[in-house]
Length: 542
Image (tube, rainbow, N blue to C red):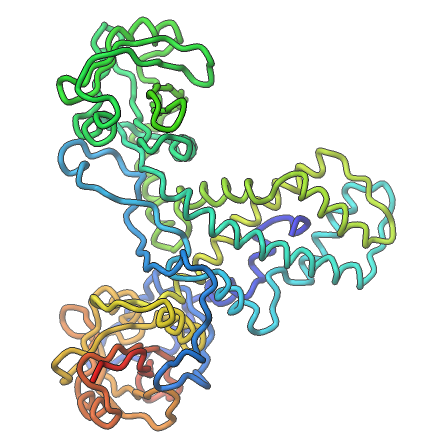
């Protein structure tokens, strides 16, 4: 894994990349306009990534334990839904106090072992052989004074070791990143705006605090006139008052990485946290108006006294640059890329996993396969270590996008067991056409099946448009379909109606059954652009 070089070049040839980044232009070719349509709706960016069409060959009507993917990690069994971007400006007041967001892991509801088995299902390795060989030769030749000759056996052995090493590191990263992402979200004061580098620095600071969020503050003229620094009431009551109480006292204030501190008077009597007589302190540390600082609250030992540390965040975005950066960030989130917090967390945990000493030993061992020796210097090894971390972040993003397509879409309050979740993931891998598996519980009425609006807009609308279609609906692995009417209703919700009650009756579906619906591209040019296959995940109790 160390010698792969640039992450984007290697990751672009992996199996998940080919499945995820497939352009949706082919999908546009498969769509047909219905009666009365004047134009074909443009493809949605959220569904631009799609996998090659494959029919499900062995999916049973009722998914039992033998057909499920076994669970490897107990901690990944919870259903986790991505939430809003925590980088936005602080919203002071009661609304900010109600936000109880936490960073979700980047791979929701998915065990890494199951994903890797799916990636390797067709005999593909995480590291494709041809580009890997090119990278090995380029890196080895750049650090050797003589021409090196690699035998095919040495390259194959090197690839096997790198692939196995990458799998182990990726397992550790996904396990550790969950812990890193659970740290408190920073609070921003007085409409502070940060650059992307500053946001990453603040997020890293929050990973080392005592459970109290980082508070980011931009210095104003009032801070230099002797007025106390007052932190918001909500911030104080939620995080500081339980530790400090409602009293006055002295608290240690550190600046940057200095080991010396000054004792500053504080008070929480007015329900907010105030630092008195601190204007002289900030002047002595050359703090100027407009500078942005992050305040972290640390404790000497668990349950001990708190101290405050100021961290300088140099530079600040103007309003135009901020709006541009925000638009780029929102566009990236719509495309399914990793958020800033996820990238920082992955890089941080990757640095923990890829330790220097074991990494050097691995490089020396696997390069011993070469017929000629390579003299590695420290700078070369550090460069390889940095390249390995960057590649892991790139590969993690590919895995995250692949996992999003495999994650089933649960339409209502249906609760799945870990085994049922894994069974739904297995169905997604085998049968999905870039559309997530739709999970729902059958209610009292079987006259029609109306899909949720968000699911319809993101996944079905680019296929169906505004036309009315006769779709083929299968059950389990049956080859004989039932024709059911399928179209998009006025509120942009796809619905199955004519023929749906007959399909439910002949297949024995009843109220309380938990079902999974997978979608396949229609092969008949004259028929609907999609066909459906309904699987029974859990039968209702008798």
